[in-house]
Image (tube, rainbow, N blue to C red; front, side):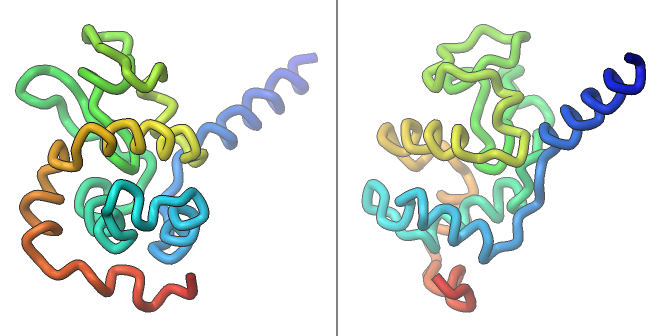
Length: 145
């Protein structure tokens, strides 16, 4: 019985681990989930933003912001408006635990990202500072999409 419990625990840990995506693997996944052109933003722009936010790593969790909130996962989804971290008051507009955004299954992350994007892209400082003012074409050039 103890062996079975240990095996189940190990499987749970393996399933809930995060993932550092290869650029082209992530680009294909985002394209498959209709992010290329979503709300008028190119896939290259999303890839630029994601690279500068998390380095394509779903486990990325930044240190607390000045207001005490935290950004989670690949897209650095903020705990004040978009997810519940169990510590801070949250509007939880994505109806999700923040921990759901730090595993290797990014379907819920993309669903939440689409809600954020419908409001505006500007919450992401890398987008404002590093992606928007520059020519972002080429982020997916070497990927076979």
